[in-house]
Amino acid sequence: MGSRSSIDPFASVYVGNLTDEATPELLTELFAQSAPIASVHRPAGASYAFVTFATEDGPAAIVYAIRVYDGLFFAGSPLKVQPMRIDSTPGLREALDAASTEGYFQFAQRDAHQRLNWLVRRIADMVGTIGLYPDAAATRPLMD
Image (cartoon, rainbow, N blue to C red; front, side, top):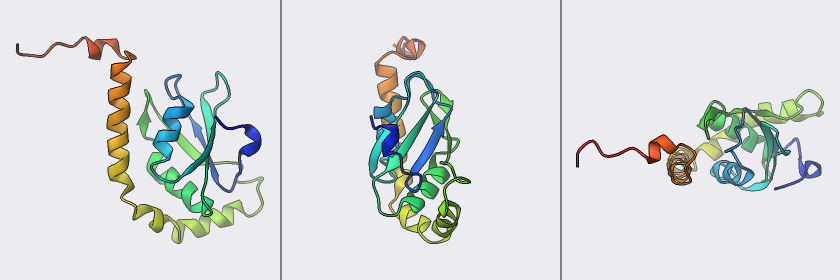
């Protein structure tokens, strides 16, 4: 989903430490909880992806995504979320600094944590249902 050419450093984050179970579709569902998604680009066989937000306030979406998702345990491993090419993109560091103090709170007011918790539970149910963790699916109740 998405191509490398559609990656805007002012509206995108690098997402690393991905397992094979972290498909572009699941990443889209996860990151859409913080801002609308324009694209998710994950090269075949790569343990990273680029998520591009479809919002006019890309730097605020980047800051928010980093604060919410960096370190989040997702599809078997903790995510590493960071801005793209911060040193080689003129003006990006300044835009992120401004978003840290101004735009972040607008995103935080969306009650994203509640939606994120719902999504993580939903994904956990999906992962258990499709058998990625067969031991969990085979567990019997403690009492019959």
